[in-house]
Length: 217
Image 1: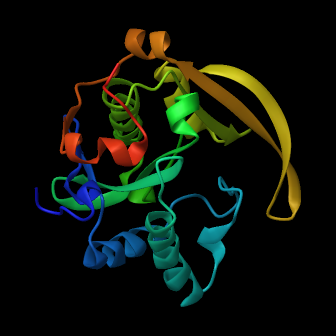
Image 2: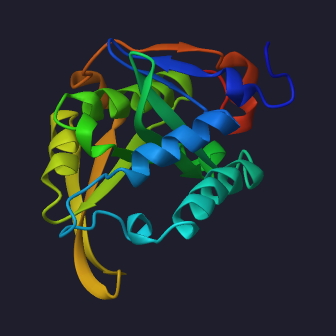
């Protein structure tokens, strides 16, 4: 084990084109630069908190604080795994898997972003497929949830391709306006039917208890 005090650093997810793992401090700086270079069109905000519009140096400082905060607040009952994503040794984006009361509820939520210049290459599907495999095959989850604002065709397309079903809509306040969020849910059986690609997971056994997970289902 490379990191006995924080074994999540040894967790690795690999798809045919990508590797996902926790970034080091230096890699967080690189990841921040990818985000700063652009994630979405200026006229469409895909996030509830419009963090991509913050000016420097606030953008960079709060970006780093967000990743630090997720680690500092980690517990088996409430956790958020923010993995950096590499393609051919180059950082391309970030994929999150999070849960509350996972030992009882066994349901997870996902969120992600890709640098704009890396979009349209199928990476979004592989990123999501990787953490879904971790959740279902590795941690024994029973369902996964996602959501996207109406008009976010890329995110909705990834969800539908991976088998999610619409689970309602809701009106939310985001960026000073009311927006419609489309809610999606992927139960375990549909995940099995729509598995998109092969995923290799390593380093999970040492940190399984940190997720509040028993043996894999």
